[in-house]
Length: 329
Image 1 (cartoon, helix red, strand yellow):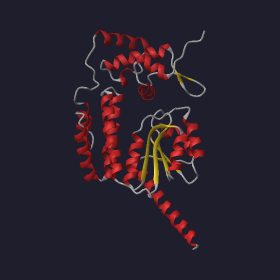
Image 2 (cartoon, rainbow, N blue to C red):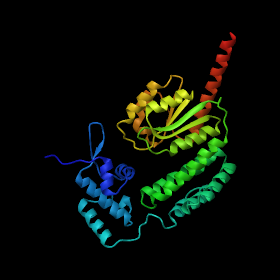
Image 3 (cartoon, rainbow, N blue to C red):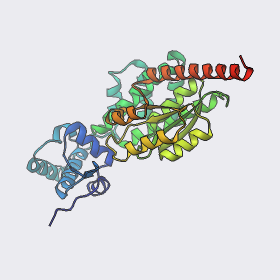
C-alpha cells in the first residue's frame, strides 16, 4: 500500500507553517525535499509534515531557521521537545528592535520608515514617504526607500526575527499610499494605458503596485487589476481599455505548473500591438515561457522606467504615422 502524500495546502494546515514559508524554507535553507508529480506539484509525506511541525515549534521558540533547517530528524525532534518543555520568548518581534537593528545598515532615508513600521504608525510612514519623494524624487523614493524597506522586512520575517503582522502592515500601508498617488496624477485617458496585475496563482501583489506607481509617475494611464487574475480576464481588460502594455508581477510561487499555460494563453488572446512586461524574482523560473511570449523582462525599477519611456515614444511615433496616413501625406 503506497504512502499517503499531501498537497502543500494540506501540509501547511497540518504543520502550522504557511505555504509561502514552506517554499522559502525549502529553497533557501534546504529544510526538506518533497516528492513531485509529473506536473511539478509538491507532494508531502507524513514525515515531511512532522518535520515542518518540529521546525515550526523550534522557530517559534526562538531558534533561527538557518540553524535548524538541516538538522537530522532525531536532533530536530529532541530540540523540538526541549522547546516545548522549556519555551523561550520568541525572537519574532512583537518586541521592538528587530527593524531598528536592521535599519542601521541601510541608508538614512530608510531608517525613519523602518521606525514607522515598527510602531505600526501609518501616518508617520506617509510623512517619511512624502519627505523622501521631495528629497530623492519619486523614482528615487521607489528604488532607495520602498524596495529596500520591503526586502528587509521580508528577510526578517523569513528568518523568524519578525512576525507576519509587520509585513502585512507595511504592504497594506504602502499599497494605499502608492495607489493613492497614482489616482492623484489625474492622467488623461488619452495617455497610453498600462495594465498592472499578477496572473492566476501569483498572490503577491506588491510588485504590481510598484509598477503602477512608476507608470503613473511616468505619465501612463494605469488600470490596476490586483492579484491572481486569469489570462482571459487580463486580456479582456487590456482590449477594452485599449492598453499599450500589460505588466505582470511574478514573485511567488516560482514553480507553479499552471502558469506557463496562462502566459501562453495571454499572448494568444492579446492583440499583437499590446506588449507584455514582466518583473519579479520568479521571472528566472519562467524564462522559457517569457521568451516564448516575447515579454520584456525588467530587472529593476530603473529598467522599468526605460521601458515605459521607450513605449511612449513608440506610441507617439505610431500616432504621427496614423495622422499622416489620414491626411494622405
